[in-house]
Amino acid sequence: MSSAGTTVNRQIVLAARPQGLPAPDDFRLVEGRVPEPRPGQVLIRHTHLGLAPAARLRMSETQSYAQPMALGDVVYGQAAGEVIESRHDGFRPGDSVVSINGSWQEYSVCGGAALTPADLALAPATLWLGLLGTSGMTAYVGLLDIGRPQAGETVVISAASGAVGSAVGQIARIKGCRAVGIVGGAAKCAYVVDELGFDACIDYRAADFAQQLAAACPKGVDVYFENVGGVVRDTVWPLLNQNGRVVLCGLISEYNDAQGAGPGWFPLLTKRLMVQGFILSDRLERRADFVRDMGAWYQAGRIRMREDLSHGLEQAVPAFIGMLQGRNFGKTLVKL
Ligand code: NDP
Image (cartoon, rainbow, N blue to C red; front, side, top):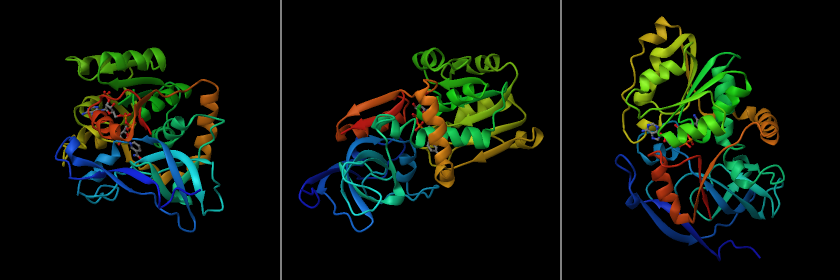
C-alpha cells in the first residue's frame, strides 16, 4: 500500500538565515504528509542523507552558483533510498536510488533527471552518496579534466581527509603523482598518509605550517586542488610552479563569511597559471567514465572513502554544523 498522503514525513526546514556559523535554532523539525508522485516522478523512502558544505551557500540570501533556499524550505541535500511508488517508466518499487535533491527529510518525490540508480551489488548505499556519488565524481572530474595531472607532478589537496579531498589524493597517486594533503589535526594527517597512501600530509594549524608544506613539496606544486580558501590557499600560492593548475572546487573556510578576502592575483600572470572554477552539475556527461573508473578502482581496493555516520534525522543539524568546523572525519552521512 502506498505511504503517500497518509504517513508522516518528518523534515528539517530552514527557520532563519544563519549569521556566520549556523546555529541549531536556524533549523526546525516539522511533520508533513508524504507527497504523492506525479506522472514522471517516483516516491522515495530515504535511508541515508549525504550532507555537503554547499548547502551552507544556499542558506544565505546572496546568490551563489546555486539558488538560495527560502525560509521554510526543507534543507537542500542528497538522499539515498528505496523507490516505494513509481510513475516513471525507468524505475520500479524496490529500486535503490540516489536523489540529488532529496533534502533533509524521510520521504521525497523526484523526477527521473535528478535520480541515479544505486547498484547495491557493487557497493552499499552510503558509497553511492560518497565515493561513487557526487563527492567522488567531483574529485574525478576536477582533478582529471581541470588539474590534468602528469606522472611525477606534485598535487596538493586541501581538506584532504574529507569526501572530495580524500578521493582526489588517491586518484593522484593512481596517476603516478606525488600527493600532499592539508588537513586540520594530527589524527587526520596520520589517516591520510597511513591509510590512504598520500606521500605527505600537513596540519594547517601547526605554527610552522608554511615551512612544513614547502618541505613536503621540494619540486613545488603543479596542481592545487582547492577546497578551502583563506589562509590555506594563501600558503600554497607561493609554491605553485610555472604553468601550474589550480582546480577551484570549493572555499569552505569562507562559506560562513559573506565576502572572502582572496589573494592577490599577480602570480596568475607572472607564473602563467591556469585557475578554473567548476561546478559538477555542468559536467554530468562524464558520469559513465566516472562510474567505470571509480567502480574498477574501488573493486580492486585501490581507493576508499571513510564515512562519518550519525543516526537519526535530528542529527543532520549537529552533523552539518560540525562539518563546517572540521569535526567530521570523512563523508558526512546521516542514517535514517
Ligand atoms: P569534507 O568532507 O571535506 O568536509 C569539510 C572539511 O572542510 C572539514 O572536514 C574540514 O576539514 C574542512 N574545513 C572546514 N572549515 C574549514 C576552515 N575554516 N579551514 C580549513 N578547512 C576547513 O566536505 P566535502 O568533501 O563534501 O567538500 C569539500 C569541498 O568541495 C567544499 O569546499 C565543497 O563546497 C566543495 N565541493 C564542490 C563541488 C563542485 O561542484 N565544485 C561539489 C562538491 C563539493 P579539516 O578538519 O581538515 O579542516
